[in-house]
Image (cartoon, rainbow, N blue to C red; front, top):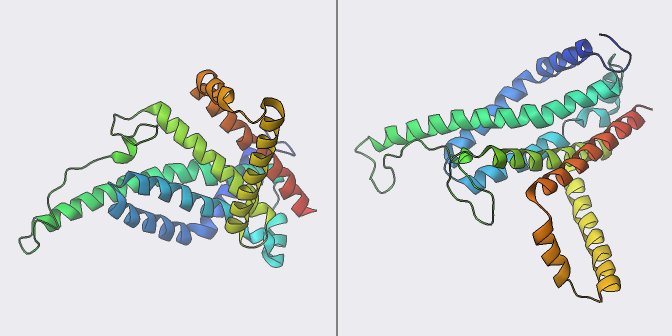
Length: 254
């Protein structure tokens, strides 16, 4: 069904345009990520950091072309609505990126383990440096909490990780639309300033209401707020940032 606002055929053409124009850079990018995972395949904190940090750069730079006069005019002349363009950007910077990270992790883990064991089989290298290592899937074996513990794959934890990933991606996608230059650094600085402002306001409210005592607040928070409510509270800002991104993208067109 075709409409003036949202049409799946136009969305399909936008995806096609993206992969045609950026096919080479995408292959290079994911090839590099696979090589990095070859070395980080058993370093769980490093893999989490790689997914999140590389993800925010990917999201923040997705709309780079709209900030250049020539490319920006060509982009806004594409016969598709801003809602359709934003939908494609959300899918590419969240679902597509997350799935591709999992795929290149699997490829890098298999290749890295194979090469490592092949080198360990050569007598020339000392056993202290290279020794046979079994294939492990540590990215799928984690437990949320204060420390990372090996555990069977937990779907709930993976969902929590994906929601946190969505939050960072949606925020830096908005920053990529809003800021013309240095999108990552300016968005990161805005987050820090916002957190400082919220912290100051919270401290003032606590002081005015409770006379500076926060014990009762911490106890109630720990007892009453469940993990599911926290996940819902993470989803709401994601939706908010997507809505603001839509209006900002529409404003850029004007």
